Image (cartoon, rainbow, N blue to C red):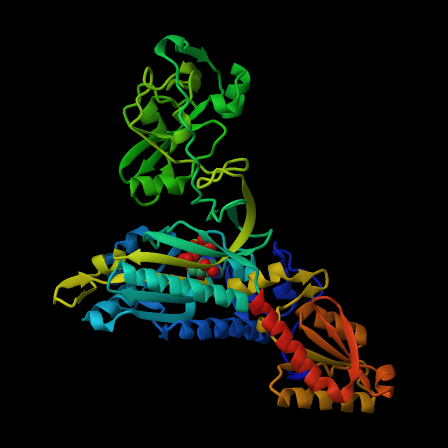
Length: 577
Ligand code: ATP
Ligand code: MG
């Protein structure tokens, strides 16, 4: 490709709204342009990277035995009503009506559609295992689209779905996908880790997220420094502390109500009462599909809503509104407490061993001190409800945990029979008995993977593409396009490289070398061949590696073989990593 014929609008300035480096650089490198919030056009350079990622994904999915399909984006509401996700999915689901006033949605994911295919086409155990995947545009009306392709509303996803006769089959299919994902992200040249994760709106029994390590990541990854425990912080279990002997009734201090005028926060109450946050128990009231529930959690801990959702086995829980809190406790928010509450009370494990603690008094401007379980409070259930935090111990081995940040690029789920049950996707087993198909689903954000690569690999001059997903592998820069011998040599190198299958860009623009070098660095092409006067007089050209600035000077006749060797080396390095 010739630079002057390529639509490559590079920019010096960062876009005002871009917060993260990948968004800034994709915009400045002329890869993407914004049409509306979370909706982007891919310009030629951007699309080349997207296609590279897609191709790696496609090759590895095929290698793992999955078959490519393409499902519709527009989906009828009826199908989503069958699984109840028409109600459950909330506002992320883009809904509209066709000309006959029939409700439709733009697919945010395709469990419904693929299970509909399965229930029509799969009859016998002989048709499984089966894995179908597609690479396609999804729409999720994200509440806060941001960071460019990282969290768009319209985005490209690879989604795969496996169908097996039983759990053991699913286990195998899941493992195959796990391995395929490892290969995919390795081949993209990324540093990543797989963590245990929550299943969320997709559902199912187990899941792993593939995280690209980056400080700007939205996800917090918890990993044990001694054993191999790694989890998303949402999912990370808190180690249950051993029960301290709670002391006999006699040693407990007498319950006492204290005036705490206008003190509604852990901070103000504990300062006023001269106790530590860990001596207070917060009572948080939630609205759930099972009614109002009170949770008790230590003052220095945070509630993990997804643990509560899982425990209750219900859809989304939400912190109760002021009215609901008033109705349940008889007091405004900030003064709720467990004593005398008539709603279900669930306490975090860490509350189990507390004595003489502080709680709200269910009365405006009042708190109790010396509250004790059993004597004063009846807890319906103890559970792991809290977010784990720095300083916590590994739930498996008890050693210390470390926290880091990552970008979720892939997510795999064991769905089990969640969708086959509701959509009645069954097959006949060896004995002619009807059984539900056991499913898994597996997603990769294609645009997010490209963005994550930039988060991982960039410097102050621009992007540093890993060779396997670079839009071009080589850029040839003649430093003066008025000089005929220079241009001839550059053209010759360009032709030979193109002929050898190298993806090469020839910068034959009438610009200064400075401008050309800056653009080459910004768009992140891994190898730059500079054809300059001084070197050429001696029959030489220079090759510079974008990733470390290393340069070598070689005879111009050796360019093709040297470049091919360098490309191979960098491609293989990503697989070895
Ligand atoms: P997140 O928690 O980041 O919203 P998710 O759990 O909703 O992600 P999945 O439903 O598992 O995502 O989708 C599979 C993959 O699709 C994700 O791992 C991610 O790479 C990608 N993806 C999801 N939402 C977006 C988005 N809004 N923009 C770009 N990629 C996305
Ligand atoms: Mg999401």
